Length: 206
Image 1 (tube, rainbow, N blue to C red):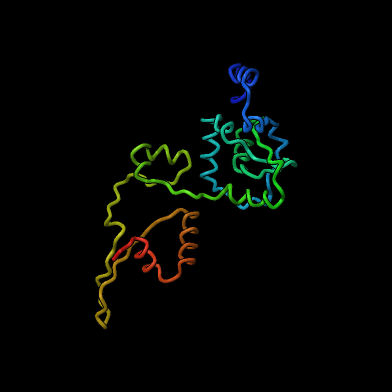
Image 2 (cartoon, helix red, strand yellow):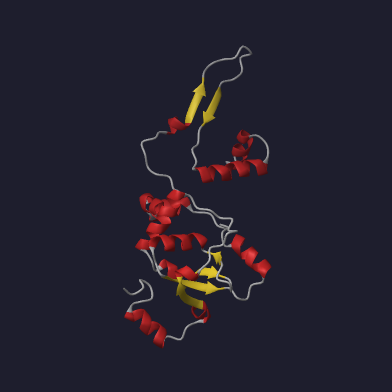
């Protein structure tokens, strides 16, 4: 069976008659078994998101052509460890790679981190208007899902009074995935101060 990305006659004609640009010249097709996962990769993926990544490759294998795995000269992965795992899970025998031969050892270590850093932020209004939340969730993005939950479910009021007649306290309850919860706690620790004060300032409350 031809490779889902590279095996078609159209693709073969493309490489026979098309003059590749610099990036295309860098792309190689190698056997999946020859690629070595990076044992020092600091990025992990949870089971549910890994299943979604596997499914996304099954549904859209051309993605691997658009985002090749990046390796060094020893074929150790610098960018794309999770994609390599998913490709192995799917059972693809070949995969596209880019070999970063020009990087020093220090630059390789820098690349591993920067390749996994998300510098941008999602525009949630655009996402809500242009994409279905169910599809976004299937593609691996944690999004708010429509439900019958009322805003009242997030707020509770303690009507009991202490002996010193302290004012009643309102509580806001938020739920996060385990991964996002760790990020929130880390952010709180960096900002310092009480949780209430941090949230108040982030919301620009006056």
